[in-house]
Length: 101
Length: 167
Image 1: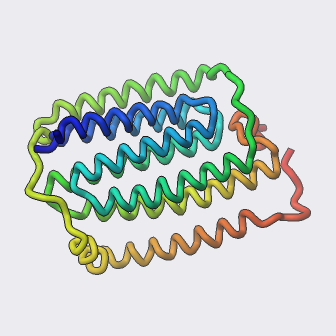
Image 2: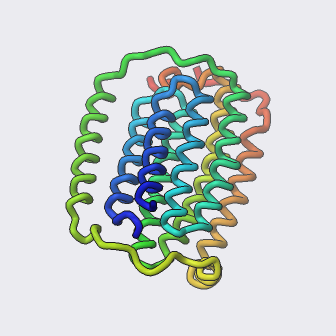
């Protein structure tokens, strides 16, 4: 007997919320990126739970695609962060305001 | 036993996710992120999606967290100073928290979601069949996307001479 579906969904919503507040409240670009990844993982958890409880496999296949896109996104995002750090010597979002005025 | 395991992995995931977000030290945050992903992989095992758990461990904890740690090491950041939040951030987070709470409560009270699971999880063969029939085009597109990402990373990490800085 495995746990009912809504516990998985609530857990995934909680994980998404934690990642979301990480993105919203933190100033370090790397930690913001980890928050984004947490949100992606939370969505994969919800998809896997739904496909398990509906007896279909399409949700699991989507989890596959999400994982692939997340891997590509991390590679490109971290390359951008490194290029940014080389140029500006900082990755704090408050100090990156070149386009402000 | 399953309930115990579910509670264990759920607690591990949530506590380590909180650790990721709240930690001042970026290396500790990355380590908490890794543990949180291990918790999610455990939940995938409980959902009988063994392949997904394996791929998650391989791709995320193997590649993504290692990449994060490399970058943290490369950038050599000092610990962040404590800064006050702007009023607009606080306003936005209050609204977001209220919306998320409403969403979670709605899901929790939805009677459709209270049902049990069906017989058993998917097999490896099912994935293969679906990936190479129904989802053949997305697989091709994803492959192309990975190629573009690789090229983009190579271009981004080159040194660009004579590029003036925006002040």
